[in-house]
Amino acid sequence: MTEIEQLLARVAQQARDIRPWGWPSLPEPVAPSAIARAESALGFPLPALLAALYLRIGDGGFGPEYGLLPLLDSAPSGEPAVVPQYLANRAEGVEDPDWPWPEGVLPISHWGCGMYACVDCQDPDGPVLFFEPNADRAEDAWYVDSASLEDWLRAWLDGTGWYEEASDGADMAPWPGFRIRTAPTP
Image (cartoon, rainbow, N blue to C red; front, side):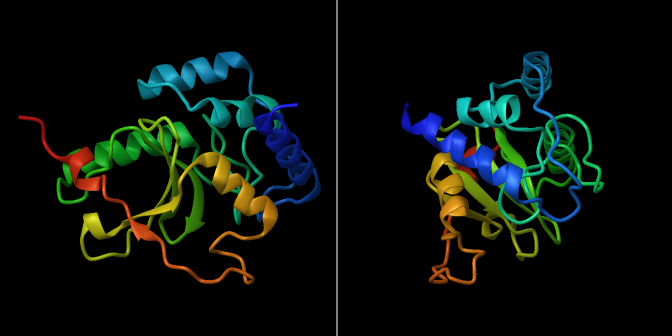
């Protein structure tokens, strides 16, 4: 069994055992056609691990804090779905150029107060970024939560994420790619 298969097995077990706030039960996994529809709407592919989570474990409702957002349709708790939220964030960024939303940065988990965990789908490692919109400037609202989606999931499973009481409270580093990824093209 590969490391990714082991990780998916651990996530599946945790997903069956623990319900985040607002999720009465674990949603069914999505069909491959849902992944295709999502990628078509987004204009880019989902990282393989993220697609596997939706295909094999469930359409959101598991993971840190409020859990992963559903892929295409809103959650029972009223949480937005990943694809419509990304498209709305991109559209809002066009209307407010002081707060652009980076292309390919997919919000996957809502933390409340407008904060999101996001996967950078343009980076092969799929780093997880933390968006904190309560900053004074857009470039100060983005942090690197984890070097990869794989590491982010492991931190959740191991109880070592920054959001855990047992965490050492280490600060997240600012995301250095924000200005590069949101600069207007000449």
